[in-house]
Amino acid sequence: MIIYSPVYRTRKPSYTVLLVMSIIWSLNVKGAEITCPSECTCRTAFDPELGQILRIVCSKGGMHNIPVEFFDRNAEVIVISAPRDRPNFLTIGPIFTQPTPFVNLRELHIVNSNVPSIGQYSFWGLQHLRLINLTYNNLTSIGADNFRGLISLTELNLDHNNIEQMPSETFRHLTALKTLILSNNRISTLVPRLFRMLAKLTFLDISDNPLEDLNPEVFKDIQHLRLFKCRRCLLRRINTQIYHLVAHLEELDLGENQFKYLTSDEFISLKKLKKLRLDGNQLSVIVDNMFGRNRELRLLTLAHNRLALLAPAALTNLTSLVHLDISHNKIDRFHLQTFAPIVETLKTINFSGNNLPLNEIAIVLQILPDIHSVGLANLSLKEIPPNFFTYNDHIVGLDLSWNMFTKFPYKLLTKTKFLQHLDLSRNKIQGLDEEDLQRLEAIAHVDLSKNSWRCDQCSVGTMLVFMTTTVLNSTIRQLACYSPLRLRGTKFSDLTFNVLDPCPSTHEAQMSVIAGLMLLCIAVLSAVAAALCCTRRRAAHYYTNEEKRREHEHEHPEELLSRTEVGSVATIHAPYHTVPKSR
Ligand SMILES: *[C@@H]1O[C@H](CO)[C@@H](O)[C@H](O)[C@H]1NC(C)=O
Ligand SMILES: *[C@@H]1O[C@H](CO)[C@@H](O)[C@H](O)[C@H]1NC(C)=O
Ligand SMILES: *[C@@H]1O[C@H](CO)[C@@H](O)[C@H](O)[C@H]1NC(C)=O
Ligand SMILES: *[C@@H]1O[C@H](CO)[C@@H](O)[C@H](O)[C@H]1NC(C)=O
Ligand SMILES: *[C@@H]1O[C@H](CO)[C@@H](O)[C@H](O)[C@H]1NC(C)=O
Ligand SMILES: *[C@@H]1O[C@H](CO)[C@@H](O)[C@H](O)[C@H]1NC(C)=O
Picture 1 (tube, rainbow, N blue to C red):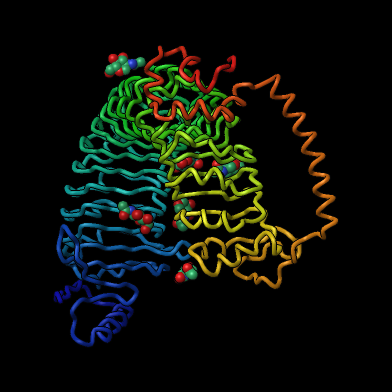
Picture 2: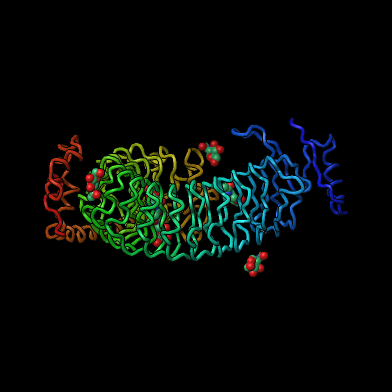
């Protein structure tokens, strides 16, 4: 046990102070090992870098001053925080530096404490301090004098305040700073030379500020930036001079802004870019060669835009791409050659929430043999043909949520041997039989919630048996009945077999239902036959031409692609698509 000797301020203690001190002493009956105010906890812990460190945590909330005179001056970490609904109301002057500074202090968190301002020279002398976290306070302006003397500070968190004003050179004393978080403030302009002396800055987050525009001048001082986030900044465009200045950028997040159009040379300077998030904008097209110079890009999200089209050469040179999210757009068809550059590397693709028919997705999936995870949510799917993933042996994750499945896609899922994540929530499935449940047992993460579970003995009887005896128990317990009305909302965990209605309908009723169904079938079949003759021959061909598929099973899709000239897509998939849809 490390013994910490108490160091008290020498000013005359007030009565409340004396009271608190007596509480402390009475708590430390074995002798003053670590002094600690009653509203805090003070513990030594092991830190891999620093060895034994003393951590003081005051997190009960409702504080009006920091009982700093009772803190051990050797503390390495101080955390003053509060529950959301019980904030502190604090001011911070030079309390950590006078009369003697906390010389060992490495981290200081003062969070959710309504701190209105920092004060001059507040941290003077805390030369080992590496992190200051002032998240969730009420700061409205900050200036250079607030940060004097913080020569070792590498991380400064000022997010969730009300900062409007930051003059030039605000951070000039923080020459070691690497991470600066200014998100969720009210900053409307970044003044020139704001970031002067921040040559080491690698991570800047200014999301959730009403910036509308970014001045390139500002980025001259932070040319080593690796990660830049400006989500929800009301941006309509970016002066590409900025990208030229921060050419080492590896991660760029410009999600939920108001970009309508990006030129083909937009990201030409960002040759090191690995992650690019452009989701939640208003882009209607990704033009040819847009990412031609971003050969290291691994993640691209274009979700929640207005894309109707990915141009045929939109993904040119993206030969490292692993994750592509094009969900929630207005895409209704693809150019197959769009995907040619990424066939070797792509592992996850999200098609959810587009206007895509299944066969458009099928032709893309068959050239992506290494795909691990597929998003097919919100596509109004009623079913998926059993051979849909014939070319995708490695599927581990599958999102089929928010569709219209009425039956569990058992046959489809017998082919996805490695599936570990399955989301079938928000469909219209009424019940699962033994076969379905046995398939589900082999899948580690299953979501079946918000289906139309029909709580009678026929539909969910077997599920109740599995609920009590198998690994599916926790998955099934959480489900709720949809029908009959008297059981709607009842959790499966509260159901017993006895409360379920017996299987519906007598023999006669069944017979009349069957007769009705047969009539319906004949009608549907003739309609389908008519439809097949006239339209969409390709789709029909794809699902039925099983023999020809088999012949080509061992052929690699890349080979199929490379055998043909780019542009002559029609011939690439001749075995499966003899009649390409006219575009
Ligand atoms: C700052 O404090 C907030 C609230 O306690 C916490 O969520 C966040 O992780 C902290 N930041 C750092 C860098 O420790
Ligand atoms: C936070 O700052 C604003 C603007 O200065 C002020 O109007 C408000 O009263 C402050 N809130 C608290 C809780 O101090
Ligand atoms: C693709 O990359 C190559 C090699 O870096 C480069 O020569 C070519 O211009 C790039 N294509 C486009 C469209 O930028
Ligand atoms: C799309 O799917 C991927 C995984 O398949 C997931 O990580 C991502 O969050 C999804 N995108 C949206 C917008 O839901
Ligand atoms: C499906 O669409 C709904 C409504 O737009 C949305 O709330 C939900 O997040 C979407 N789910 C997925 C998985 O895309
Ligand atoms: C059911 O789940 C609980 C935890 O959710 C687990 O402790 C228990 O062993 C499970 N029962 C069976 C039969 O798997």
